[in-house]
Image 1 (tube, rainbow, N blue to C red):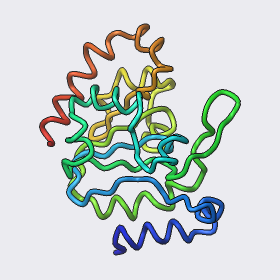
Image 2 (image 1 turned 180 degrees about the vertical axis):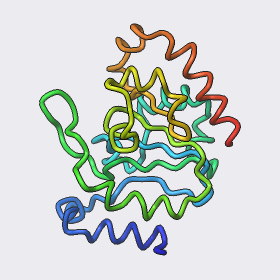
Image 3 (image 1 turned 90 degrees about the vertical axis):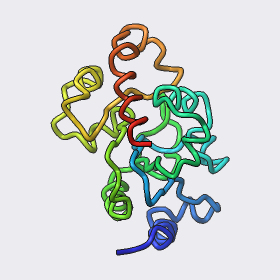
Image 4 (image 1 turned 45 degrees about the vertical axis):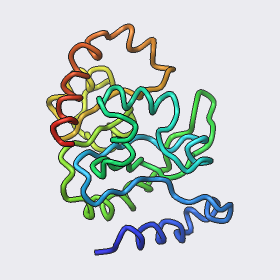
Length: 190
């Protein structure tokens, strides 16, 4: 079994990632050997890649609020890992960021997950993460999130982006029913 450091270097040396490595851009994920909570999302944002810090923006503030954790717990508890579907910013598309590259998660998730045997809860943030990890998901993201309890130990949620305010206003059950359960599960594992 490879170490996290060996996997990190293998990702950097992978020819599929040469365009990033040549620019001095390292893969962005957060490995914790003792993690009990794993966060899987699409890919780092442009600002996350530039600052080399994941979830330190308005979306990250909301995600921590939804999880019921402090910034210190999120970054320093040793219990929360972050493994997006792609460890590099995929670029801008017509209506937002491009999707994560195909084949990336297939290549790199399993070796990393094998190094984190204590993960008991995996947050699947957004449609791409849910498509990858939930082959039996519902027809829509809304239905999948509404039936989150069917997917344990996975916990599908919407992206905490300010762009999703409209969705949250249309689905108040997310705040009143889903988030208290998410917070209770996260708290129990920390």
